Length: 243
Image 1 (cartoon, rainbow, N blue to C red):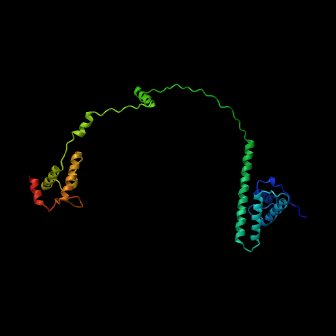
Image 2: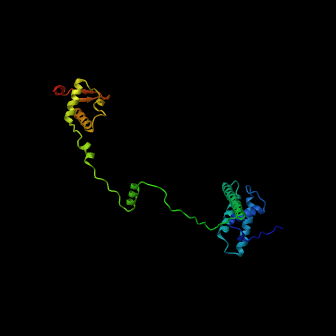
C-alpha cells in the first residue's frame, strides 16, 4: 500500500523548495526528472493541505495550477509547449538547488569564522606644520582666505608702446609695391609677397592690395598661385609702376 504523503508547508521556503524535496525523496536525477510523478505528488500534497487550510500560501497554489497545465500538455502527443514548460521548470529547480548549496556553504563559513572587534584605538596627532614657504606665498594665501584677492597692477606705458608705435602701412603703398615687383620680375608667385619678417600691418595691407588688384582685373592668379598682370589696363599699370 502506497504511503500517504504528509508535509508541513512551513518547513519549505516556497514551491520550488517543496519540489526539490520531492526530487530528493524520489531519488530522481535533477537533470532528468520524471515530471509526471513529480506533478502528481505535488498536486496531491496541495490538495490535501488545502482541504484543512484555506489560507494556504498563494504561491504554492499558483505552482500547482502551473503543474496541472503542464500535465495536460504532456497528455498530448509530441507537444512542444509541454517540452518547453518542462525545460523551464527543470532550469528553475537546478538554479534553486545551486543557490541553496551556496547559502549552506556561506552559513557554514559564518559558523567556522569568528569575528572579534575592539574599540578603535585613539591616535595622538601632531598638528605642528613643518613645511616652509616664502613670505609672499603666505601673504597671498592669507588674502585669499580673507576674501581679499591681490589687485592687478595698472599697465605701464612701456607695455602699450609696441602697439601704439607700430608702423601703419597703407593699402595703396602695397598696390604700388606689388605692381613694381611684377613689372621688374622680382616676384612671380603669391607666396613671395608674404614674409615672416613682415609686420602684421604689412601682411594685412598686402592681402587687401592683392584683393583689390584682382577685383579690378589688374592681376590674375592661376591654380599654381602664379601672378600675372591682367590684360585690362595693363598699360596703365605699367606706367604707374614706372612712376
